[in-house]
Amino acid sequence: MPPPRRCLSCSPHLCLTSSMLRLLLDAPSSSFHPYRAGKLYGFVAQIGLGTPPRKYNVLVDTGSSFSWIQCKPCSQGCYDQDDPLFDGSTSSTYRTLSCSSTSCPLAREATMSNTNCTYWNICGYRIQYYDLSVSKGSLSTHLLRLVERASLGLSLAAAKDMKVAKQSAHHYRAFSYYLPSPSSVGYIQVGSYDKGSLIFTPMFTVDQLYYIELKGISVAGMPLNLTEEAQVRTVPIMCNVDLGSPVSVVPRHVFDKLSDAVAEEIEGYERVESMPWCFDPLNWWTEKVVPTVEMLFRDGVRLKLDESKLMSEPQGGGRICLQLERGSDGGVTR
Image 1: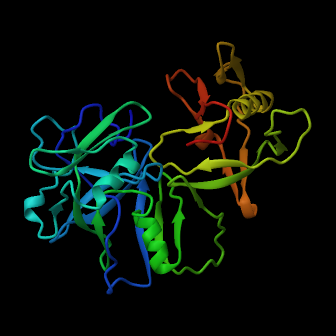
Image 2 (image 1 turned 120 degrees about the horizontal axis):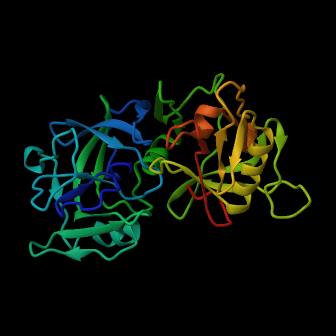
């Protein structure tokens, strides 16, 4: 089931929630915002939107520079959600943006599509995602509250110079992103931090997106050759940090080598010939062992993937498959 932002038919009355106009002076020097791993394989956070603030659950999507929330009216049909639709008429800080606003042309860059001007001179947008789903609506400004005392004013054209994280980092000099698990809460921290016993790998931006550097992959302790050459050498792979994608997309040659290495080390399973990234149990009494895959990132950060993080059981019956997607050759795109 796709994450919420990938609805196939969305109302033209959507409004965005992505970037910022100002940081209020009463915000603390360091703020935590919790988010959870959701049932749709996305990461969900709770925000306060508008004045007075009303709470909404949103999908945290670092793979998109343009965000939105469903709003009233929704005459052409919104997809189902538990939260009520945002009603701009109840917020004193809600403003629609005209076609002559400076933010309107920026939305064209963020959505990679043309903006349009409505009959009422409101700047409209349309964005299409990787899975061909579409969102469209009108641009507006809001007040976004991440925590009780930290607020961001939003100009909802999310171009590269108008991201919450980027603007927050400019104001506070740093922001950090802590991974959650299905049973724990993670955090986005804005401002100063005490590294303590935590380990960090740096993020960097390319074309509005955040990346980290993958230095190597090992299976059962044995390093893989991440190049297409016979000689083993270290070639870093750029990984786009995309929380809105349910699976990681791996370069084709890396995916094939990883599948082969797992097949060599796995015990109690046989490889499915027509789907070489999947494995069927030999029988019910044989001990089953799935090798641990470890990813090495810049600055020595290691991420271990055991069976629960590496495999899924898509059809039942005991068959398990790698929770990865075989992409084209190049960087890990998502």
